[in-house]
Length: 50
Image (cartoon, rainbow, N blue to C red; front, side, top):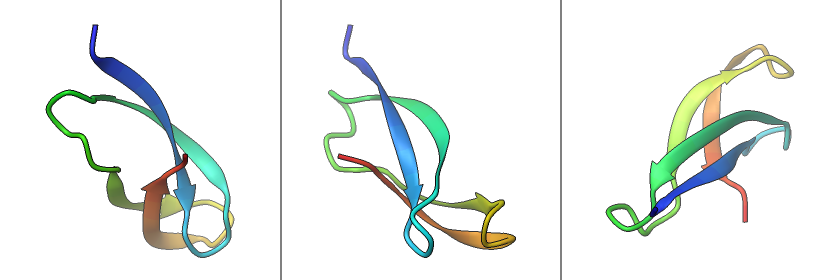
């Protein structure tokens, strides 16, 4: 099964808040999403952690 769990990390403060799953076969590049960060109290860019 090609689905993989990933952790998203805030680019501003480094908080690891979100756990997502994605199809690694279809989307080989790292995931980037703009989501709400509770520590920063605003929407920031989250990138997939290594």
